[in-house]
Image (cartoon, rainbow, N blue to C red; front, side, top):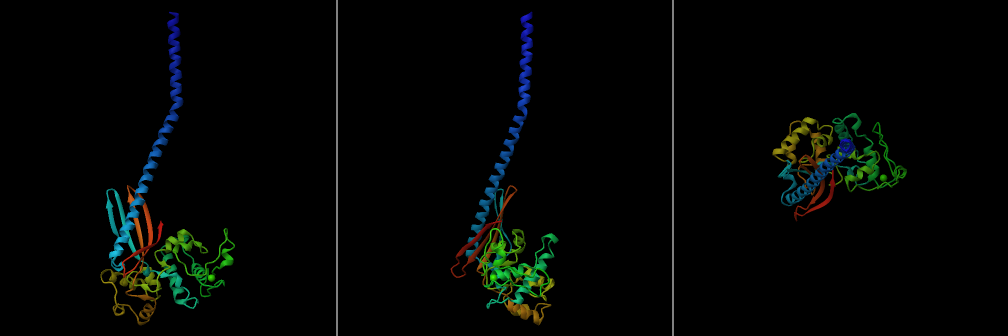
Length: 321
Ligand SMILES: [Ca+2]
């Protein structure tokens, strides 16, 4: 009887030890399980993100092929592609519809008051749609003038009440790391982030309306409504809307057509003829490609240059947004 009693006690002891080990290992097992599931989810999201980026790049190739065969003037609504669970939208934006910030100084290198006023109005119009903490300051204007003019004299705009002082190398050399003011036209919107007071977030709010390319004449068939309003204080929201609505069905071709628009005064017509064009050649085209694969999205922005004679399309810049 005695040995049997000992065996039972030993068996109970072993069971307790095993249960203790199981309980001790349980958090480790659960933790490992959670980590594995998290890792699998991360891997899956990464895989879908890569697929979305590949699809966005394919969308860009489609955009380039489209531009080879179609005039940018005829590209209005976004194009949509679908492949299984992947979707992609391609939007063409004629750069000529934007304000060219390299034209704030005239051909003699002097500040061009008309274009400066247009940019100040555009800032006001954009700010109306932004929260107070997101607003763009007037300081962008003198800062742009100084960055693009040849001299090292800091600009002061007396007709601007606040933030009216620009910045030259003396300012930028005091930054960490220091750098010099370019003193020449911008070659890319990406350079904006080097300008005093500019952030990537500010650039994101401006990039639909500003460019560094083109001859400075704003294409009425492509300008966003805010740019149309910024062209002249006489071009109010109703008139800008009329210019915008009409071109969707009948693109502007001749100045005489604009002259007949209700609300078009002789003064405004004269101004528009100096700063805009109803039918321009549009060699520079921006393309935005947004793709999505099972809820994961990627976006690309590209600047293309189209030769209307050879139909060749050059890719000047590509950026992931
Ligand atoms: Ca300068």
